[in-house]
Image 1: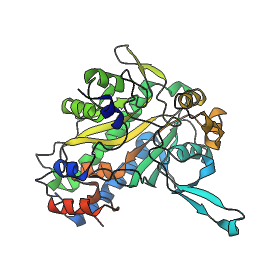
Image 2 (image 1 turned 90 degrees about the vertical axis):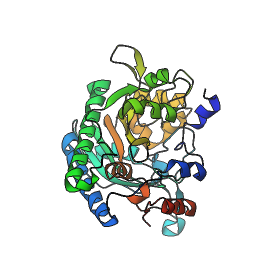
Image 3 (image 1 turned 120 degrees about the vertical axis):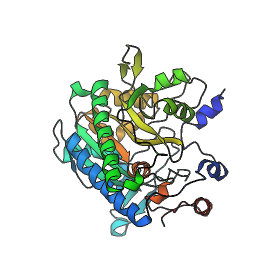
Image 4 (image 1 turned 30 degrees about the horizontal axis):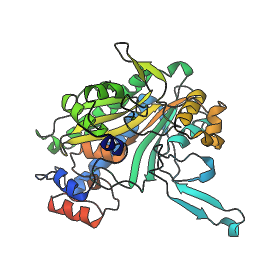
Length: 379
């Protein structure tokens, strides 16, 4: 039986506590199905396919996105509610300090995108997609966590009537259709990826509420619950991440000021549930572990923003321009998310490590470990 301490420790981070543990987790019988050169070609084939079809399915347009933001804007993403993942901050001594700026490197473009919907004059049913880059310095660097982050960050204007669970599921299914299509596209371009050890992603996602999964595995920490359910359903969308469950913990910490995790909903059989957000997770047959691809959700409105900030002890955030714009109804209602590019490419190209599809910084101990296991990390 899991202790309360283990559940609390599981709320943030990858669930891997040391490189000794990672040594046991990385596969012992691995070899890449593609050469480094073909891997690069496949990466850009996948990126082109996903960007084109994501925009087509969700009626999005590609736009530029910031790498740095003004601290005073309040648009940087804090990722969670406990302050464990703080952004990189620096001072710009502009004009000899007369017009200086305190800036931060973005951790995600979640809040910026919603403000950008207004800037670009998006109407209901229209949206934007970005090729986002970010830095998250507080991760433990393992096989699928890097301090360098790349995402297809997207956002779409919705109406008040669309703030419901069925609309969320409809959008999730469209995203899954794009990811499945990308897999088929790559298997056609690179037949060597057709390996019997690595089955294709399932045609359909299974939708489960975080409350359902806790009832199924009440004594397991979150990541172990996900691992267990993925043995039964290899591709799932977990609904309601951020709401405090019956055991006193949320499924995972989620910031209070972007996704709506507090709105009451109902399961398909009529039981009371919570949340209009969630994550797509799959079983990765290469690493033989849970594998998160995307987080997304219907965004907070004025009411749920205040409620979630209150529950999180962060009502002081209402002083920021971003939060004021939501509270005053000055920016559109929206749905949005971030699809991890390297995570998705790692899965589609049957790779064992994120460093095979993205260039980042890794500790010497990890690079040496990968070398011993025939995993070629890019530098």
